[in-house]
Structures are given as C-alpha cells and as structure tokens.
Length: 248
Image (cartoon, rainbow, N blue to C red):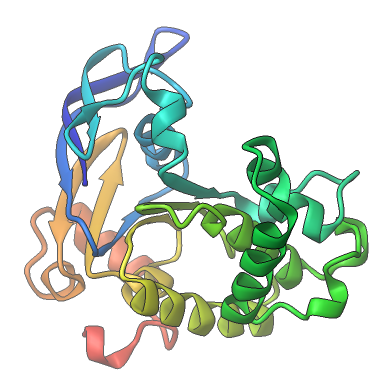
C-alpha cells in the first residue's frame, strides 16, 4: 500500500530519516518503533504528504505522494494524532463531521455515519455534543479515531495514539483498537515507543535508529533473531510483563 524508495528527509541540514527503502503491506498492521528522534513520526508524515522528501520517492497505492497528489491521497488515508488532535471550538460531533461537511455530504448521511462510527469506537452518543475540554483523554482519542475513519479510508496512520493516556485507559483502548483493526482489515501504520504495545498490535515491526531501519519483521524475529546488537539492547531495555507471552 505504501512504498518508500531511497527516501531521505533532512531538517536544518541534519538527516532525520534515510535513505530508506521500505514496503508496507496492504491489509496489515505495521508498527514503527524506536527511541526518540529515530525518525518514526517523520516517516509517518512523509507517507501522507505532510512533508516532502529531500531525495527518493514515496508512493501510495502506486501513486507518487507529491504536493499535487497529496490532497487526493489524504482523502484515502485516515490520520490520528496523540490526544486526538481535536479542534477545541468544535463539539465531538463537529470534529468527526468536519471534513465530510466541507465535502458537501447531506446531513442524514453524516449523522448515519457518525452513529455507525460511535458504535464501532464505543463512544457514548450522549457525549457527541460535548467539547474536547469536557471529554476524557480516552474519549478524545476515540473521537480522533472516528474522524480518521469517517471517509472509510483505505489506510490508517496513527502517531503515538495512546501515549498520553493513563495505564488503565490505555489498556482498554488497546483492546478496542486491535479489534477495530481486525474488523475493518485496513492497512494500518502505527507509531509507538513502547515495545509491548508494538507486539500487541503488529503483524510486522520496523525498528528504527538514527533515521535508519535496523530490523523489520514479525515480532518473534526481533526477539529470537536480532539482526544487530542494538535490537537486543532495545528489547532488554523494555523487557517486562507488558510484552505479550505469545510474542516471545
């Protein structure tokens, strides 16, 4: 679904990512993981065309991701930010419906889709008219997810979607998100710094360091067949009860 070919991104003359070549398979959940500053979020923003590569190419469904094609691609790719990234002056309903109202959807279609997504995301319908400051952190994330899914996109990108939540809310949302991913069967690319969370979601993990891919594969490949001493150090630094037993 996504493909990067010799892709590089620099900020202020410093290489933040690449050059990397990476294919992200359709219908699977790929998790990008690594220490802070390794290039995870930069890679995600390249996929959706929020930033342009300095060299190399990015493609989505065989379409080059450029300033010309970015708008059309964004209509096919949902994007979820940490803490939802909601507009504070809009209600939950207003945030979810913002884009489709701009696109001219009739009101009955909008309301039908919101009801469908509220059920999918387990968001209480009586909270749809509340503003973000009156929602819990978990509820804001559910609204952000509903907004990203409103157009029934082909792919879903999530940048540290659960990082700001307390452990109990995070665990509940992890369960719900994984069930949603499995139900919808979409291409998912998720960024996290947490190895246990990566193993919980991933069909495939891509471990980054200093803007380069250290290893990519199934979670068990990283645990049992590390490609580099850094992989072992990274796993040992996070090893604990949060890593699912089945992944090991």
